[in-house]
Amino acid sequence: MQARPSTSGYARDASYRWLRGKLEYSEVRRQWKLRYIALSDRSDDYGGSVVLSDARMLRDYQPGDAVEVCGRISDQPVGDGFSPQYSISSIKRIVGL
Image 1 (tube, rainbow, N blue to C red):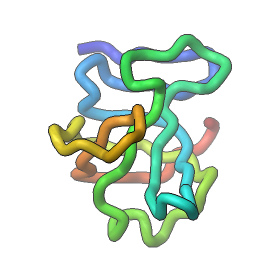
Image 2 (image 1 turned 120 degrees about the horizontal axis):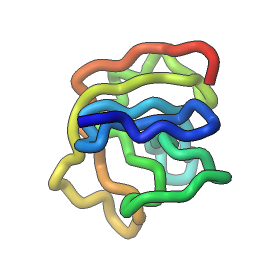
Image 3 (image 1 turned 135 degrees about the vertical axis):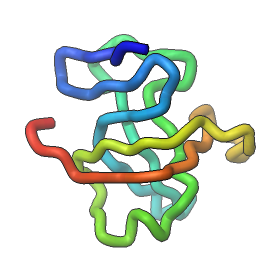
Image 4 (image 1 turned 180 degrees about the vertical axis):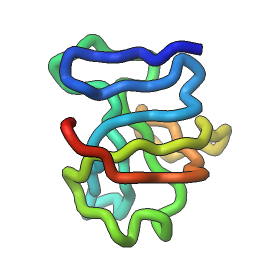
């Protein structure tokens, strides 16, 4: 499957096997999210972001870091949010986003 690029450098695999974007952290919900579609770009069925399920993998990262994650959309619900949960198998920093 091919990537879904955007003019801003955010991207995703068509099957969501990998996502490229910026990390966000909600102090209120105490959860990490990854925005893989810029707010200025056209969104997808998930609103352009996912909730990241394994916070331990994110201990060396900060909100705003540009990353690429590999994994899959999880079947686990995330409460009342619109974004689905994403199970991370790997994560790495990227530059130029």
